[in-house]
Length: 541
Image (cartoon, rainbow, N blue to C red; front, side):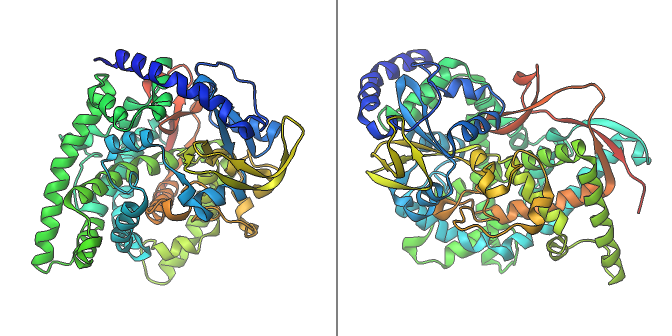
């Protein structure tokens, strides 16, 4: 059976269930929301092709922080940007909201059955085993690797700009370069492994990660997105069966990546175990994980397959998400020159203090003493959350608390919202991060200054500065500290040595949902993520 036949089979098997569900969730039908543009496809296809943030802005302004929107076959879903509701789903009653089985099967194809896939007791066991390696000490231990790779990237850019002569400029696709640099950084710091991405070495694993997310998700055809959406009603295992037989180039690429990653991960794990036996004391993440796992009681330990899954998870998520975040940060600095200049001035001022105390370069503690750097980083994470939505399904009937009452289509006022079991709740990280009640009257504007006098929220959602970007609760991003330190390291290194501005060709950049939030050139969307900037070498300090 080929992919198209599978799509037809899935469609036929789920239509009856979808029709039943359409009339089952009466409360959801009473929640106001935009008109359904297509009974077959719902809103998903149309929003997939629209600029990220535009949809969320429209929903916030027309319906507030809770809205009904439609999935395929008339299915009603909840779109949620309400702080109390999100807190309830992610932290207060996380056991009442789980991942879709179809989403977990896709995750297993991407990353194996690691922390991003696990649920319940399996998730608790995996997280307990990984926690020691992902604490603040472990995150700070990766700083030297981040610094080395950011300097290597700067060297490459200097080479491209007439050997780094001040005033010289060149157009650089920063998305591509940052993806290479962050892959090298996570390889060296997390695993003691050299991807050689910046050097363009003949590394099969490094090559298999180039635009992997876009190759798999990218700009899907309507029929593929339809099958992906309705697969949640298919029997467990069907999505896996379908993915393993999908012959599209992106899925073939994913399977090659998995094969190569398994081979490399298995070798790395054996190396770390042997080093541990020999008394070697390494500080990379995998060494810490293997050591911590060995010290656990047998019932809490990770199997070899689970450790391999964690390696794949960190390899993928640890470079792609940070690369995109840094890409958007530099884009904002290029658009808003006064922000870039203020950040560069703070970097120069801090560097003067560093040299006065007898040191030559920055430390992680120096970053913490730079309020504007922290503000730029937080504002980037707020405006450009790489995961635009977090889908969860209600596992049983429950009641969703609301920050503000909503008025239903029927005129009924809801101070809290009954949610039937089986309801798909879409937590909008973009929508939450654009909520005026949280971020002030100008949430759509990139303005780091808002963070310099930010008040503590009443119902904190996320693990970092009340942002939803790293999620929250037991399923929050375990590597958020790594991401923040890496972002600060690259920003300081690059802004210190280069000036960033928009190219003169007038190309328009849009953000699309391509698995992760990605920058594309308007008219060249199917070429994948791109963000060209004019990069000018600055004089030596």
